[in-house]
Image 1: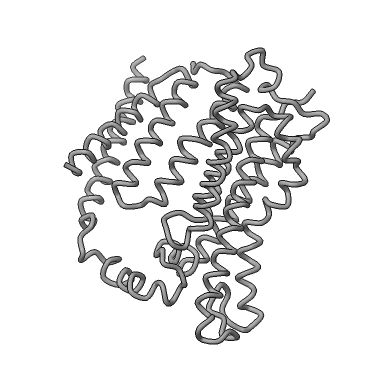
Image 2: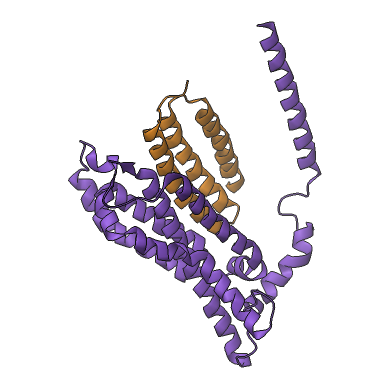
Length: 80
Length: 248
């Protein structure tokens, strides 16, 4: 059961990573990347590292996304 | 056109060769979670059995991060501090009189629902961050983790209540003091043992009697944890402030 959950999460991670690379809209990419961090946080928890999971949730899903969005708001939203 | 296809073919073959090499290297690695792995044979038993009496904390991860691998963590803390210095050198620190943010001039005001919810939730998130820092010796978490939670809560506050309102409460002068706390607390506690004549970053100070030594080590470790946590929170908040800044 747990192994199955891990496989689902890891496949999901790869799919999200592909979406982030392929999206031309940078704002959407930043938001999807925050979802990547959230899934990664659960993977850390599954691997038995709650410390890292906590950091990933706060930094990856929270702070980094906000910093990305500020950077996008000061430059251009769409990739050429 | 033909040249482009040729280049792409070279890139794809190179990537495939690299992937093959990496995969063969991974296949050579020991299995995940195998009890006969080299790290599980030598150090883990020592950490688990003697961690509490040697390092002073119930949480083995904190023992390893702050005590057995203290140098590494000190380097990491210094790296975060240097990152802030580099960012400020490029972006410049904000000034209350000349700086403003697009958050405040935006025609779309934050709705009353969001304001009320954040006003209720902000103290709780902040308190949880403090709890993670102060309870890091016994439960998962510690300085870095609690610091990031506090920083996230402060950034949420800035996003909802505006740039200038928060800048008024958390002036750059006020934050400057806390930013330097992360590396400074580590160096201060590390040098404490140098004065007595022990190695750098040893927490078991022999000037205290046998019974109190562990308590003192615990106290020093929580001092470092608080330093890292508050310092990290201040560093992330300052980074956010200086990125938001626009000049009049």
